[in-house]
Length: 273
View 1 (cartoon, helix red, strand yellow):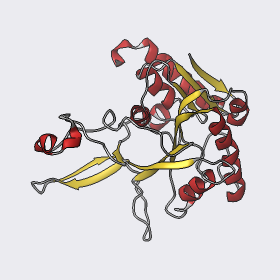
View 2: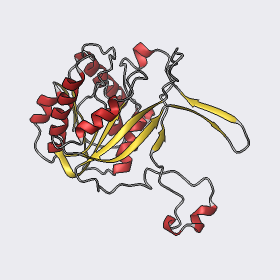
View 3: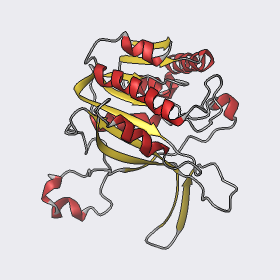
View 4: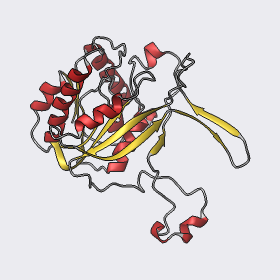
């Protein structure tokens, strides 16, 4: 059952039973002055971190011992320490999570091929500054209760560029799949109108949620939670991957309505599969 609830995440989390969730994928407010529709994103830093510890403690309670908590956090060029301060706060004794992996979600990148061709891919917001460079990535912190949760590295992996490595390395087992590593290039979909196609100032792509779920591992019994639902991207990912058990909380009624509309459109449009 996919549940999208209009309520504060702390209230919603406290109503959930212990150890009922397999995977959490979410992106909370960053306390960087982002222009949300109703939420004030300009609070005191210590107060913000204390609030994060509150909801993270509840996530720890509802997460199964072998569960995974994927926390997407961005920074501002003038405030680069916030993601690190947050993950430090969530791994203190109050919350007691273990940082098992750190992933870099790359939104835009330029690479040079073996032939010397330069290719640019992805999207970024240009910064007009003499001090800072364009910010083309965010963090995804993988938090667990023990730091030893097994992952589906190959399921979430990539094919070998050099096929000779398949036979050369014994650990491949003859499979043309290797671990993707901790750098994920996942660009946003191209949009025509931000107001219509992405009416939220800090959403993430559906494929980011899918990558997290595939890495952790999923089946028909997987229960996914997003305590900061926004416009429902994680619910969309759950539906596309066949996950029937999903819970999302959102305090902004406007964003929640968009999430419901997106999900209804997906369910009714069979051409999307």
